Image 1 (spheres, rainbow, N blue to C red):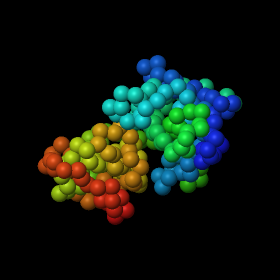
Image 2 (image 1 turned 90 degrees about the vertical axis):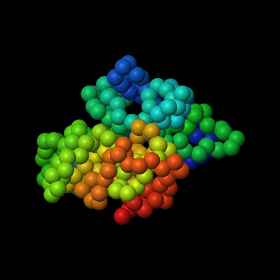
Image 3 (image 1 turned 30 degrees about the vertical axis):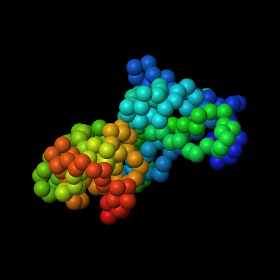
Image 4 (image 1 turned 60 degrees about the vertical axis):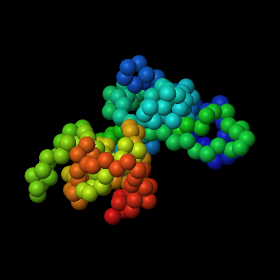
Length: 231
């Protein structure tokens, strides 16, 4: 993938690929690349394909009437058409969007929407041998010390924090660490995390957002969320 940090970034003439999702959704990306992360602490290897959106628009966020052909968040990838690569088939994936700053006046030949499709590709042990995956996709988790059962499909807030529909909540997004679900910061009704970090569900006290008292003013701030994720 060529560097986008240039005033004359173009996708004309680059390699195009097609991603087919459930419900007959087709996403076309240009100047694409496939990447693979190093194994995490649990041996999970996450892979991704990303490229510049060539057949859609909008921000990808929930509620944006201009978003097409797919929104950010969870999705089912049926198959891919990426020249020189075997098809990626039957994967539960996460869709993310990023809009880098374009030059002014704009000289790019595209709208500048970078889309990333990520999935858990496999799990291995310390010797690189395959390990069965039993946690991704789970909808509940029991705290080994307290016995409390957490619903992994709902949003949470730290104990004592007020709920604000325009603020941040913490939700599970299929990432784990040493057998414990991680919660990531989501802004408002967005279907994909903000990227501001993750926290262990086993650390601290968590309250379902639906049970928290409502605060009519915006909060917590971006700084609050960053500090919370680092703690």
